[in-house]
Length: 412
Image (spheres, rainbow, N blue to C red):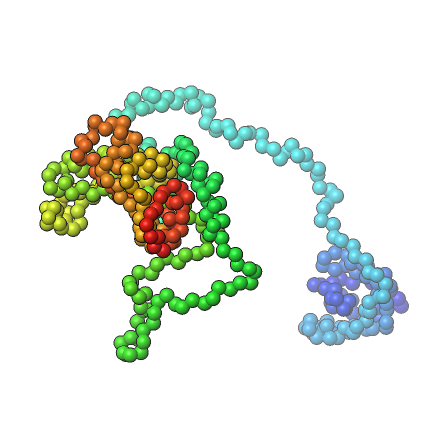
């Protein structure tokens, strides 16, 4: 007897080999599955074409055994058909779902409106509330003060960014574009990169260099586990000079103006006041005062007793304005001055030179109010040009392009 039987699958799965592993709810019958029978699985109806190979009997005893024995008891009666198998996808959208309009999803009330009633808003009077307050609010309620010290990233009181106006490090500006900065960006930077260009063909590997720190010999057993020895001639390693490319062209980072006044310890404090006013006038930066750190018996200077020095550090727009005045106004008017010595430098790209008191008086800020400063109290100063170069020769090349003259033997 042939019959089309609806087989209920319990956790059935159709494998790649098209073998059907299932539990049948009807036993003891000669079951023949005709070609084109629809079988319902857990994931929906699946249309499969099978070719019946033989009649088989499923015994009741196989149903009592565990599922792993049941899979062995069911023979391979279902063979895949050579014809193409078509699958019917499951429908995820119900036909009876009500249609919703897009306007139903819009909120009726605006998020910008206040939830406070109009009577409460009209009755609020901040002027009368402030006048009725007997004590003043603390400063922390209406004014933020940046901390003086940075106590680390985990401290609850964090300083704001230097670009924030409430920061102690905030510097307003820039308010203009100095000529020296324009010259550097338009001419000097590209010229230095061209002059210092070193061509390296593809695949070039630089020759290996000897280690900069020396190892200890085995002449003594105490040399074991010691750190490496310093370089010959000193304990400080010089900076490594990298090839100059578009991203590391040397530039002036900051300028330091320093003045040491020994008369401030010998006579009175008016010398240090005049020096501070003069340095602050030519640099446009508030100066810092320093006390002596060493003892000089000839000048009657004791360490930590007298204030004998002032210093101003220039950056950004103020630095470029000062450098422009120095190159265009002061240095050309200095008589019998040949230029900065070629041996100047600290082997790290910083150049220092000094100005006499009569040279400091050539700055426009001093000349316009020359009667304000006692002629004998105008101080001399040392000017240090800090550059991003790693070697003195690159710093001299940069300053020469900017207009600072050098003379004498150039020491590399």
